[in-house]
Amino acid sequence: MKTKQLAQEINDKLRTKGLTLSTAESCTGGGIAAAITSVPGSSDIFKGGIVAYANEVKSSILSVSETTLQHEGAVSEATVRQMTTGVAKLMQTECAIATSGVAGPGGGTAEKPVGTVWLAVLANGKVHTRLLRLDDNGRDANIKATIQIALETLLSLLGDN
Image (cartoon, rainbow, N blue to C red; front, side, top):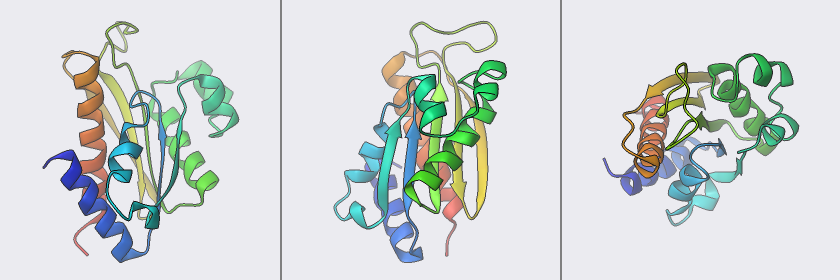
C-alpha cells in the first residue's frame, strides 16, 4: 500500500476511534509527520511531532534518560521506547510513533550498520518495538522504507474495529 493511502487509512481509523497521534522522529526527519499531515483533515487526529536528531533533544524534550543514551545509544530499543512515551505525554496523545536509526551513507558501525533502525509505536496502551535491518540502498531509500514500515505497523496495531 502506498504511503499516501496508509496515511489516509490511519487518519480515518484514528478519527473513528477518537484517538490522536504524535511523532518523535530522528532518522526519518519528520517524514512520518509529513505523511500523516498530507491528508486533509489530519488536524483532527495529529497533535504534533518532534524531530529529535540530537541526543540533547531526546533527553531534554522527550525525557529519554541520559543513562539510556550513554549505555544503549541513540539507536536502541530503550531509546525509541522512551521517545514514544515521552512524545505521547508531551503532546497528550493516545498513539505515538518514534524512530531512531542509521540512515547512511555514513555513521554505521559493526554493531549498528547502515540500515539499522529502531521503531516504536504506542497503540492500545502498549509500546510495540521493532528492529529493522534495512539493506543499504542509500539514505533516501532507508528513510522512505522506515516511514512506510512505521505507518504499516501503526495501522496494523489499530486493528479492524
